Amino acid sequence: MFEQPGYELRFPVGCWDISPDGERFLMVQLEERKPQPLTEMVLVQNWFEELRGLAPTGK
Image 1: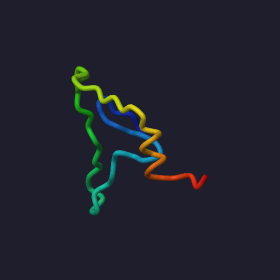
Image 2 (image 1 turned 180 degrees about the vertical axis):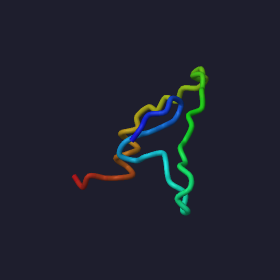
Image 3 (image 1 turned 120 degrees about the vertical axis):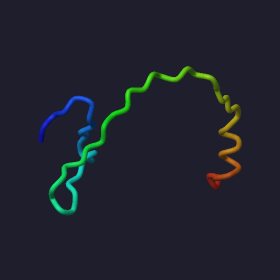
């Protein structure tokens, strides 16, 4: 295909398409984003105990 700065061209799923009438070539344009600061952290303790209760191994 071809490369265009600022547009997404990923394989195996393309972020582009051709209009049904074949007249237009559509591409997904990337949005410039600044990384967001980490504002939250979730700590899960003893999650194996809960998992064993939800999905017993049969032992």
